Image 1 (cartoon, rainbow, N blue to C red):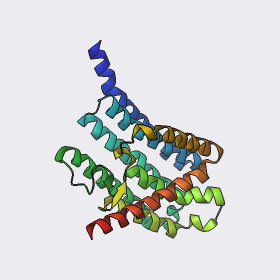
Image 2: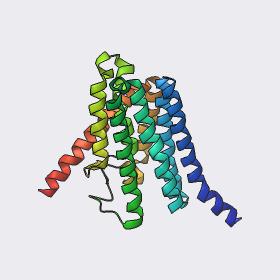
Image 3: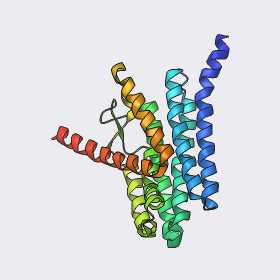
Image 4: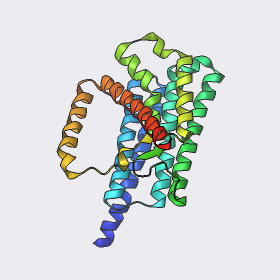
Length: 242
């Protein structure tokens, strides 16, 4: 019985990772068909699965080097290839080879970011603050920021947000931030006191209700808050270093 339990504990996180990968691949299909909203939603589902595979691996003690490698390969597809191709088909294809080049740049940066993260598992990472921060923007966050212009376009219908050069700059900047060593806030590394659990539950319910009532506006707010958190962590670490 224990062997069966260990087997399940080991493969539950990996199964969730595969679901994330399938969402990323399916997003590419819907991007090709120009079904932008479905493509975006699939990337969001991929991010949710990506969060829970790590959570289950931690809680069930089912983490493994195999799982870490699989997770990185999944993330390259779901948060590198999928958002990059979505943006390319949405607007960057107007720039022909230039648009394709920046799309490839984003994917390469995602691959390098994930390779560095995976290597850290084996080689004991050099982190700015291993309990609170990532080094560089993690690929799910980068995917979300790359799609922020589409969220704004869907919600407010500002035509300039579909400008190819604007999205080229945005995608290139986010790609650079992925491979940079700037500190970025990490919820996964924070241990909340039990007294905060009711507030966390209330906040989670509010977010869920907001996503159901107006998903695009909620995603915009989350994206902008994430941008502010990046600015905040950079400023805080500059102050500490000085």
